[in-house]
Length: 190
Length: 176
Image (cartoon, rainbow over all chains, first blue to last red; front, top):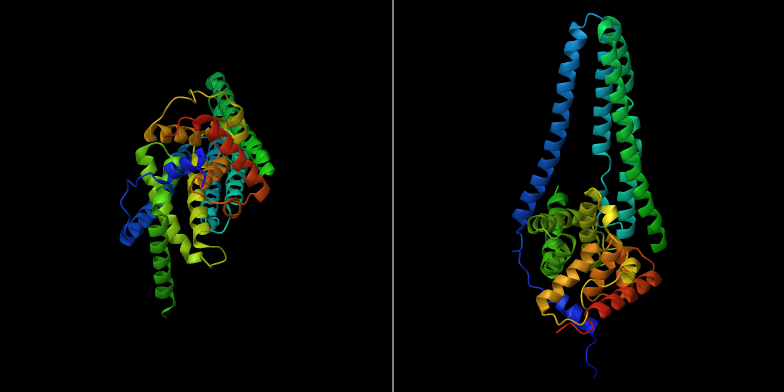
């Protein structure tokens, strides 16, 4: 008989770690499952509350603004909000990766997660930023025409908003590139 | 009419057996993915919930052990991927192998410190290499690891070789 190798000792050491958590009963499991479902419902509710807030704010502009262009801009923002809500709903209810949590092996599951996140980052500007651009532009033009004395401030505001949009897009693009690098490295594991 | 209660009962039975057989291993796995105690407990509970839910789809095409480890690692990986900036912080086994040791490998360690050092190494690994390392530490052979992780057996063997090399270099003379 030979002595166990040092790595055998490490495996034994690893497996000898004592358990610190009590076993959950089935009722506790069900309660935790219900809690996790409620957490998703709460998150969705927060998004809808934000949408209602936008709808109320721009609904007020739509109702009260003296300029037709500003009203059209507000209407377009409301339409964009509806589009984004719809996309969030579709995305949120799409077949969850969690459904395949035991069927997919870890490499498939990990790759799917990364691809999903990468695609989301790549498309944020299309489905989250772009829909608001027409309403924003039309509204600002209307405001500048209605308030010629505020034109300089309007231009500064437009440039800042544009820079913010570009900055967000670049940040997301950089994160997507980083994820793609991780995905490329995963190919070596096949 | 009785199909659903029967399915629920089967799921409950499968879960109860799996939790009894692999509960301790799942706890070790949660420790290897999460160092913060509160987050670790959350992760462990999420793994148990996912496992319980997942048994509704268990069709016996793989062993219960393979299923349990797939679910657990996939849930833990989801948690890692959800975090911002994670992709910049993890390294692969080959990178870890080429890094200089931060600690003196000849230093004598007690069990606690050896485990802490092992955990520090594991926390640095990217999800797939971390999984291979953990399954190796759980005593699994390359074929079982390949089935769970979805990596070719040849690649698993290479990774295990690297794991052994790293562990031997850093713990060879220091394990009790």
